[in-house]
Image 1 (tube, helix red, strand yellow):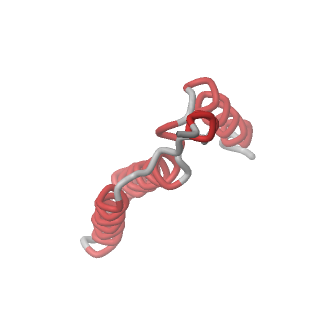
Image 2 (cartoon, rainbow, N blue to C red):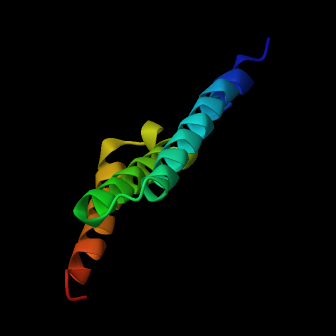
Length: 95
């Protein structure tokens, strides 16, 4: 048996398709809830708060699962998160 080939082969983590299907379903539900905010004519801060909440939840799901951030080292996740948050925050209310 050639054990050197099996030890040198990089182990790749496979994620079940059911995980991706569940996330797609959850994204569909969150998108539906986002559209229902307009359908029920919510106004003011409640409307914008709900829209931003659903947007942040969808972005988090997409980044964590489809961009594989869920399985990355925490330092890399923090680097990307804080860079993005700082860039968005730098715009501020006047920016």
